Every structure is written in structure tokens, then in C-alpha cells.
Amino acid sequence: MASLPMSRYKPALAVACLAAVCVSAGAQTYGLGRPLGEREVAAWNIDVDADGAGLPAGSGNVTRGRAVYAQVCAACHGDKGQGTPADALVGGAGSLATAKPLKTIGSFWPYATTVFDFINRAMPYNAPKSLSTDDVYAVTAYLLYLNGIVGDNTTLDAATLPAVRMPNRDGFVGDTRPDTANVACRHCSNGAPGH
Ligand code: HEC
Image (cartoon, rainbow, N blue to C red; front, top):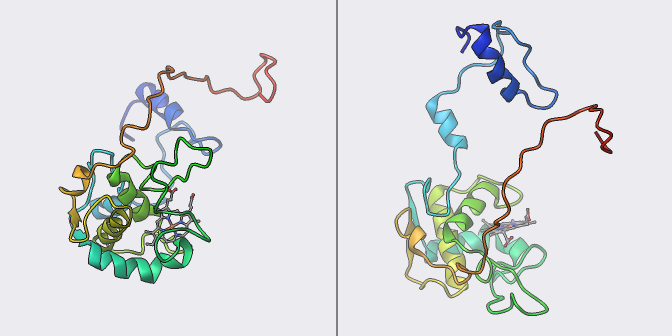
């Protein structure tokens, strides 16, 4: 990038500007930081798509998940996933269209793959990313079992997890509104409040 002529470099910089953290135009560097290695990038590149793309190698079963859950999840989500103090993860089947919908991974979430993704990146709440990949597969399997979605002899991995069909898979509608693009604007003179 540093060897690009200025005329080609400038537009790229404009796009790369984040709020107040703009690199001044110019090819000079400041001797800060270092290039990340592939393994370092891979450690942060953990997103899993709904179709299962990005699921890591590894596997876990319901039996192991039961032990993981009791040890690191039950204190916040209840011993059977019923919730309190944190969200219920189990139950709520058939409640979504009622006056008191109970949204859980069993009643609400459309994909099992994104349950894995969420637990893998965010849980346990007090120590995210502390579980091994196998234990994330295992606790996902256990929660799906508690919701009656898989059997108690289930083992999940990158091939079997995307094949799990969630009860609310067809309960969402697409947003048909077109994307819009706002022009970045500070101190504009168009009189719009807050600008
Ligand atoms: C210290 C308390 C705590 C622990 C321990 C904990 N969680 Fe959570 N969990 C939360 C809180 C708080 C939220 C809501 C987070 C949010 O909305 O950003 C949550 C949300 C979730 C959700 C999403 C619920 C939904 O439908 O929106 C899942 C799934 C989940 N936790 C799974 C787990 C699993 C699996 C473990 C154990 C590996 C775990 N949690 C451990 C506090 C905890």
C-alpha cells in the first residue's frame, strides 16, 4: 500500500477513516504495531454463518455438554436452562404468538449454527472465549437436547450442526426495504438538527 502513488492512495484513505481516527494522507509510517500472523488473525476470525460456514473442527456430545453446562452456565441460566438470573434458554415452544412470548433458543432462534457462534464468542458471560471448541459443541448439543430438538445421544460437529432444523426456522420474514446510504456529515449547513 505504501508504494501506491498518492492519486490512488487518497480515496482508499478516505474510506478507511474511522470517526476521529484518521490517518493523515501521506505514505509515511509511524513505526507502530506489526503485521499480524495468520494464526493471530484466525484466533479472532470466529464468525459462523447461518449455513455453518466458518464452523471450526471439533465435536461435542450431549453428555459432555451436561457437565459443562452444570459447571459454567447453570448459575446464571438455571439448572435446566429455565433462566434466572439471566435469560431462559429452554422452553417457550408455541408461545411466540401469545400475549406472553418466551423467546429462547428453542422457541425463537432460527439456526443452531448461530447458537454455537453466540456461545463461542460471548459465553460464559463472565469469561467469554474460555471454553474449548469441543465444549462449545457439547454445550450447544446439550441445550438443543434440553429443548427437545436433538436426542440425548447426539454428537455435533461442523457437518451435523448445520443439519439441525430449528422449530422457528421459518418464523422470520425478510426486510424488503432497500438499503440506503447516508452521506457522512458533520457541521453541514443543511439545517438538519443534530448535524
Ligand atoms: C455470569 C452469568 C452468565 C453465565 C455464567 C452464562 N451466561 Fe449466558 N447469558 C448471560 C446474560 C447476561 C445474557 C444476555 C446477554 C446479552 O443479551 O447480551 C446471556 C445470554 C445467553 C444466550 C442468548 C440467550 C438469548 O436467547 O438471547 C445464550 C445462548 C447463552 N447465554 C448461553 C450460555 C451458556 C451456554 C453458558 C455456559 C457456557 C452461559 N450462557 C453462561 C449470563 C450468563
